[in-house]
Length: 430
Image (cartoon, rainbow, N blue to C red):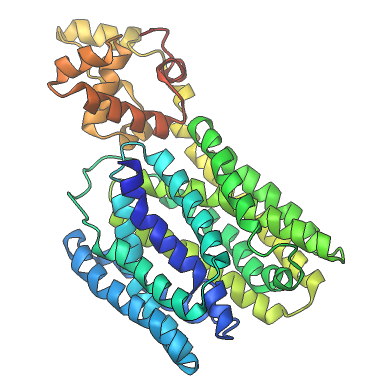
């Protein structure tokens, strides 16, 4: 199920990186600095999807949009003079396909693993796509065919109303940090293309970062953001050093930073209640940041010192934004929860001659993170029930209990039941 849910997302990302995001196919037709023709309509369409599109309309619009983006891919190879118009069309159409692929990815029972698998597999396949010895006249139709995978995939049932609701506080950080990604596309990557020791090897660093990041995601996911900032600062500190080696290492470090941030962002989007809205708004902000960074790089030109100054200013700002976000999220920290079933709750229960509900024992921030069913499952576990006993108590299957618990682990950034109970402030065991 993990691979099935990841496949549409993988196919879309390979197309995205091979063509509109200044990929090797776009470079083949000599259309440098054309990424903004794709990004601007892409951002606008994603924002409209996230803000106003009913979810029932996503599948038919994704079918039309996928066909338009695939057709544009074919036309780019045949009519290079029309690249700006074709990229703009692809930007609008692919937005629906992207959100659909994200909605399918959320159906996986192991969302965090599926996110990591999707990102890693996409970059591995992109490398294979780049080096396979076939003419570009074949690769363009192959790229168009990749879009058919998410376009034709079945969406399945709509999302159930569970998940977090804390996406908005992180969007300013995502926007600010992605400006650095735009600077990379506009300044660093162009220089790297001329000095690369082995073109495509930078993707290996991205894949390793995603796989390493999965371990942080299960424990302290916000650590990924700190690592992304550190690696990005290191990358741009090397820009001022002349030589091919510094350029290569800088790009490798930036790929690691991108891997950490992309994994965090994808996991955060997949944790939201409404994946259509989350992917629309979240990716609109992401792409808007990249577009802003790309625009800045075009205005700066070849002034490497100014590029570094702007990048460090942006990264410093991202640290401040992240600090403010985390400070605002402290009320969600489960360490602040008193021992569940404390004396006040017990007294209230005795007075009312009824057991207090688990939801009342949770602070408002945590109540928003969990669906009603997840809170019911968590209440059973906190009371010391096994998964089988919880399933019998709630009238659901044991596999459903395990699925809900995996989601709870992801949302609480823990790796198992004992760590969860310790974080909730209880001393109850299995």
